[in-house]
Length: 306
Image 1 (tube, rainbow, N blue to C red):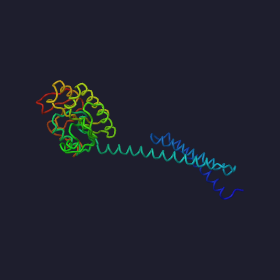
Image 2 (cartoon, one colour):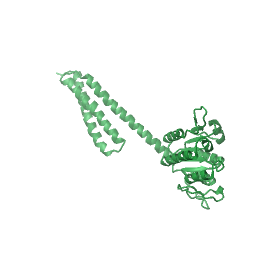
Image 3 (tube, helix red, strand yellow):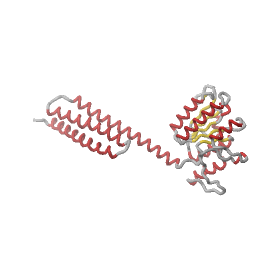
Image 4 (cartoon, rainbow, N blue to C red):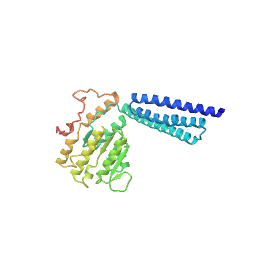
């Protein structure tokens, strides 16, 4: 005759077996109707139900019916089953939170900026106003690369970038030697990985050319250009014909757009205020095509090839 404690243990074991069997069947059926990552969660739950439900319940029933001491196995199976389910739930929550962040980012950013993914600017003041406009109206993450000390750069541009690389050989937390473009490239890759659709702004090309030849610089710029196109990000460079030879400047113009900055600012503020590109007269509302260098109104009609 079983005592009260044994009856309770037997009922608990049977309850675990029933819960385990039902959980396995339901989770198995749901795994076919769900997509990742929910389907992966269902499979892990099956393992959890099997451990603490089937194995744990069976061990508890055997302990009561055959009077075999299996408490170590019961504790092991129940604990393992709990751990599997707990880690599966935490992983699923992490995936859901990441999806939520990406969706929130998409909602904040809306449609992509009326901005070429790669562009070249000749005037630092134009670059300043463009960066300020994008940062104030859209809040996009910015990685700046320049020759100035970080504090001086922030004072000159009137904004604080999310990341900064100081092109110098002095010892400083943000410093990278102008000759170590592979290090700069690695920092850009890391930044875009952590800040999807961000902006990379590079100035100080003339300093890099003091350490490297133009071919090395061009390979670096084209590599970053391809990277931002893949990441759906933006790459802006400051390059002036006064600091480059005619051939070097023409080479960059073939790969980087040189749009009318005034028109670009109007489009950016128009999108920010009204949610769409404003329809202006005399062709100012036309979208910027991402296929090559366009005309620059400030270059006396000179055409840039794309």
